[in-house]
Figure 1 (cartoon, rainbow, N blue to C red):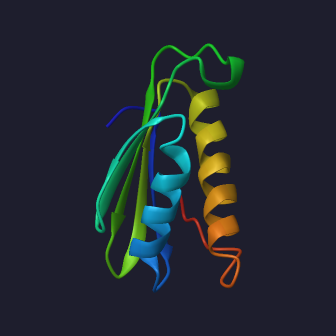
Figure 2: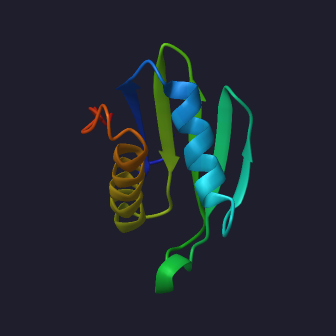
Length: 104
């Protein structure tokens, strides 16, 4: 685990649905692989004009809750992705939002 990795377990009864909605949303312009229980999204190092040391990987696992893991290459990239994931999840989970993200 690098210094730029964090995981959050997000309590929701709709983990699989949100995982699939997020992945479908991001697959239009990012490299995404997913099924009902697991998904990965690659955020390029130069996304939105940024210049991070490398690409970041966000992994989603659906179970009794939604587990979100971010593997970033810099503190700035990690913080940006934590915000992006939380904003997008809250948008899809508007009936439950704001969801709880306990980043560790």
